[in-house]
Image (tube, rainbow, N blue to C red; front, side, top):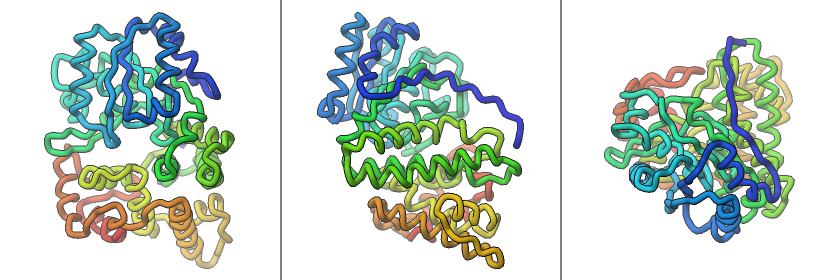
Length: 392
C-alpha cells in the first residue's frame, strides 16, 4: 500500500424524508441565497422538487433556478449558470438530480468567482482556487459525484468531454440521499447507474500496487452488493432496501474510500468519454461496452488479478494450473451480468460505428497529455483503437 492523504468532508443525510433538512443544511454551510440546479421534469414528477423548494422556503433561503441540464452535461448551461449567479448574488449551489446536474453545479461554482473562462480549469490553464459551496439532493444512484472531488463537462465548441483536475474544493458540503427518489427511474437509467458505479470500482481495483488487501476487499464487497441489488431494483422498482444499497454503494464507489493507497487506472473512462462525446450515449451504457473490451485486452498483463476478480466477485472456481481460464470466466460473467440488466454489449448497440474509431482516437489526441493514459496498462493510440475494435 502506498502513502496517501484522504479528506472527504461531505455531510451525508441518508434516508426517507431527509430532503426536508435541505434548507437548514444550506444555512448550516453558510448559504444565504442558492442557485437550484436541476435537469428535466423527473424531479417534479417524483416529488423531489416540491420537497426541496418547500424546505428552502421554510428555512427562509431565497433561491434562483436553472433547469434543463442534460446527460453528458454541456458547457452552455455552465455559462448560463455563472451569469445567473453573478446577476442574482448567489453564494451557494444546490444540485437537485444526478451526476450531470451535480457536475454542472460544481463547474458553475468554480467559474462564478473567476475572472476568466471556467474551461481554463479543465484545460489546465488555471488552478481551482475560489469555489462557491455546493450541496446536493441526489435523485439518481450512479455517478458518485455527490461525494467526489471531480466533475466532467463537455465543451460544446469542439465537443470536448473532459474532466477537471481533482480538487477537494469541489466536494459537496452536504449530500441528501433519499432512496425513494430513485424508485421512479426508468429501468435503463437504473441499470446504467449500476454499471457506472461498478466501473468506478473497477478503475480502482485493477492496479499494479501490491499489498492492498483492505481496499481490495472493500472493492469486492461493493461490487458484490451492486450485482445483488441491481436486479432486485429492476424487478421491483419500489424495493427500498435494494435502492438504498445502490445509492450508498454509488457514493462509496467514487468518494475514493476504496481507492486510497493504490495507483488507479481510469483508461476505460477516458475511452468512454470519446464514445459518449460522439454519440451522446448514457455514460454507464458506454462503459458497459468499453470496460469488458478493455479487460479482454489487458488481461495478459496480470492474469492473477483477473482470476481474483473472477473468484471473489463472481464465484468462479479457481483453476490453479490455468489461471487464465478462471480470469476469462470472470470477464464472461461480468458481460453476462451487464446483459442481464439490459446493458449494451457492442458499439452498434449504442449507435456507434466502427468506421468512426479512428476519429474517436484522433479526437482524444486533442486533449493535453492525451496519450498515453491509464496506469494498469498504458494506453496509446494503437491500444485505444484495438480496444474499441474489440467492442464492435
